[in-house]
Image (cartoon, rainbow, N blue to C red; front, side, top):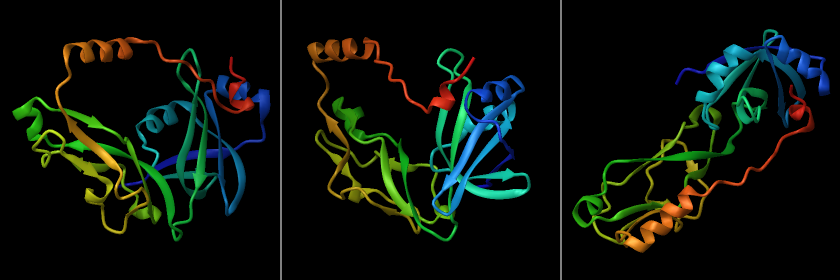
Length: 214
């Protein structure tokens, strides 16, 4: 997969003054890592807004800071609570010769015969796996094939997953990833719909600097 390159410049502006940067069409960000000192940077907000939402947490990007390139992962994307636009991004610089552990999303593929033949319900119990590998071997996601789930009660465990070359999974091998359950009764279906319709609680997070938005 071709790496995404983001152009950036060092910035001296921090704290509440970053609001002026945003008004100029710039996106404040920071690069950190155990082998470098944190670098405050700014990106073109429009260009970054087109690229960053498409990146997974395990996809490498190259951040070019005034000609100095850093291989990095996107660790956090702060958004405005009203407009949903990006207001701050954290990048973690990585060494290409050191293995790292990251959480990678699971993508379910294929059709479980138990769904078609017995009206079974596919119930995932994990959305991510923790993996370890070199940065160049990072997958954007891990595929889990459902086509072998033929009966009610059939399940796939971590040990059943086919991993890309040179990638190790750190989760418990006996942990269930997905299971086929019997079809829901009418009462259970109504209860599930009621839960799905409930409004989620909003949890605020983020650094003080990122919260100073207009």
